[in-house]
Image (cartoon, rainbow, N blue to C red; front, side, top):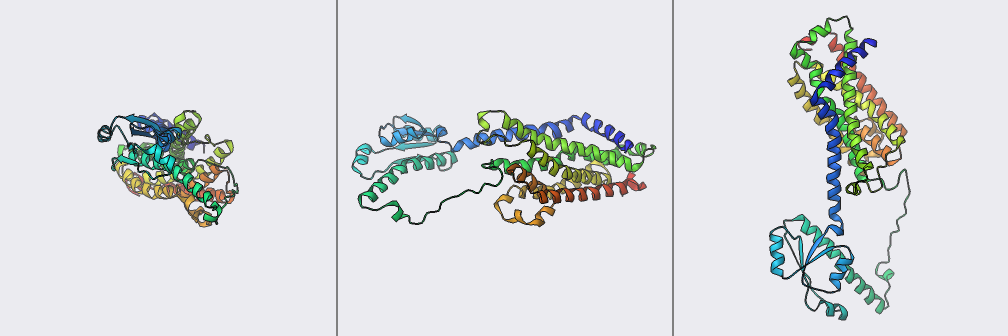
Length: 393
């Protein structure tokens, strides 16, 4: 094993020395996740009333006061023509025109029509209109309630069936749904893609450069060489995955208001959750590293290795994508899911974040990862010990 460690140090130092690896596998995941969270934070504010601008044709009435009290940014304009021009130029999302007799009609209980103008091709205008309608329709609800009371009808008579929600708290309450869906996906995906670049050069690249012969004629056992290379690519895979995790941690701990929509209850990742995530992740990292090494050993050159790995990446990414939606189905409760590689890791990470880890599921996830990693390492070792490793296995 001492020889394998020597090979690992040599290979790892060469990998890290490559600027592309440092950038793509270590720096990019963290900044990509951080940037994505910032974007999601911006988008989460779209649905807030304080961010909705409503242009109102010169009017002062109780409905305008309702919009202001709800937090809408009400902007008064001189005429409807001005409002239409603002919509055409993209400077206005929604323009409202109230009848002159609005205040009197409301006082007398008479119906009124509010004219709303939007660009139907602009989603922002649709959002502003729906939110505005929700606020203005509160007047209708108040009128209806008064009519019912005046006629001796109670709300229970109108809606005799009521459903009362009672929460059964399992694990953490109010965990961010975005965190539950995206974090498992990113840390699993980057565990594979982080090692994708260096893996192509690890063995196939040395064949192409004709430097593998020099390594194989050294007194170091070929099995030790393979183990050392496996540890090197595994270390890069783990670093890349943890880099993605750090992007979440930095965003969650930054305290920047922009991330409040993504982390409404804070980061919610403690020491226990981190340990459980690491336990679920390590076997999967080992599996990915062994797979990357085996493919690189089989390929004739780096380009061929990258072609194979590009195809394999689709097989890896599909279970990770499905892991984002597992919470919307009943499949997650089935034990067989724990035997599906990658998907079981995503589930284990999700459960850790929810504060309700399934120790049996985690144990199966670890066991499956260890078995698959062992098969991958065994395949790479067999190929390394054959003389055809220099050409084609």
